[in-house]
Image (cartoon, rainbow, N blue to C red):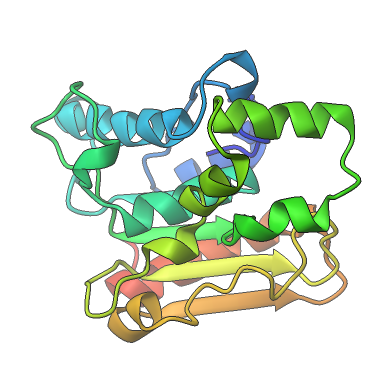
Length: 231
C-alpha cells in the first residue's frame, strides 16, 4: 500500500522495489484506493484495501497465491492502512459486499513509518497549511475530525487476549511528520502479548529510510522469522 496521504496512491511508484520481491519468489500486488481529497472519508481507504485482499484471495489460483500466507506491507499512510488491516481482520464494520465470502485477514504486517496514533496529528500540526487541513476535513467527511483521528488510530484497536499476526515496524528516527516513538504500537497488551512485535528505529533516517535494499531485507527478515522460511 503506497503512501499517499490518504489520497489516491501512485501504484507505479514502488515498482522498482516490489519487482525485487517478485524476483525472490513472492506474488506481489500494489493496490489503489479511494481518495479522501475526492469526497471519500474514512474508512473508504481501509475498506478498499480489505476488498483488494479479498479479490486476491478470490483469484488465488489464477495468480498463484497461497491464500493462507498473505502479508500486507505499507509505507506512511499505507503503513497506517497496513496496521489497521492487521488489527481488524474480517471486522464486519469495515467489510463491503465485494467478495464477501473471502477473508481480509493477513498473516504478517510490515509497516514503514506509518502513523499509529493520529490523535496527536492535530496537536503536532496546529499550524498546518490549508492543503493539509483540507485533507483532514476530507478524512472526517463532515464528522468531528478528532473523533475520526481516533478511529484511524491503530493503537485503539489493540485488544487484550486477541490473536494478531506478527508485526514488523520500521521508522526513521528523524522522521519529521511522524516522530519515532509517537506511534505507541505494542504498549498495550494486545499485539505485544499475542504475537511477535518487532519495532526498528533507523538512526538518522527520515520517512524514506525504508526504500531500496534495506526495505527488501526487512521484508525478508520479518517473513522468514514468522513463517519459518521462504517457500
